[in-house]
Length: 165
Ligand code: NAP
Ligand code: VY7
View 1 (tube, rainbow, N blue to C red):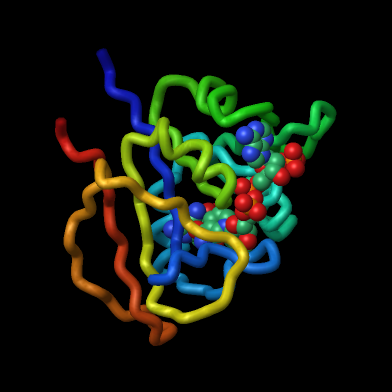
View 2 (cartoon, protein in one colour):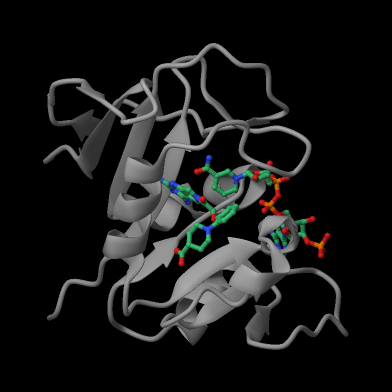
């Protein structure tokens, strides 16, 4: 058996904010570089609102299959592969590593299928309307030191895995 990786990747504040007004209310270039490097060459799965949130010039995310989850039967966009559910999206992605890249609704729907989480904590106190999923005790994170972005913001990138047993 080959173990399949289903990763979820997001950036959040300590309070769990991941978005506001269909955007991300900060810019941390080191996190974007981590996001690009982690997802490079792998299919990405995202909700239709997250697709809409990407600036048109970055859609589809280059070098990756862009699978977009929507309930709209007729939804189409250049460079996007539509899927009608998260399980359908994961099946469409095939058997290799796949990264679920948001947003809040899709993280909640995909958490049960996830084998690992890549969570960037951004040390900002900002209001939001989209939140990271609640993690149960089956998830354990490594302990990594805080770093400082060139922008002055503190951040750290933690990897969560399912605890054994
Ligand atoms: P979302 O999860 O990106 O997309 C929601 C849409 O996905 C729904 O409207 C629906 O599309 C479709 N959908 C959801 N559940 C479904 C299901 N079970 N089956 C089929 N389709 C389903 O939207 P969101 O929760 O509003 O999150 C967007 C926010 O997250 C934005 O602010 C964005 O910037 C932020 N974000 C943050 C990060 C980060 O790392 N900080 C990453 C990604 C996104 P239809 O309406 O078309 O049916
Ligand atoms: C989402 C963008 C949003 C707005 C403008 C440009 C972690 C992040 C995400 C999602 C950060 C984004 C972009 C950045 C990525 C570029 C294309 C342009 C690329 C996530 N940890 N951080 N995110 N782009 N899911 N998880 O900034 O994207 O990948 O090519």
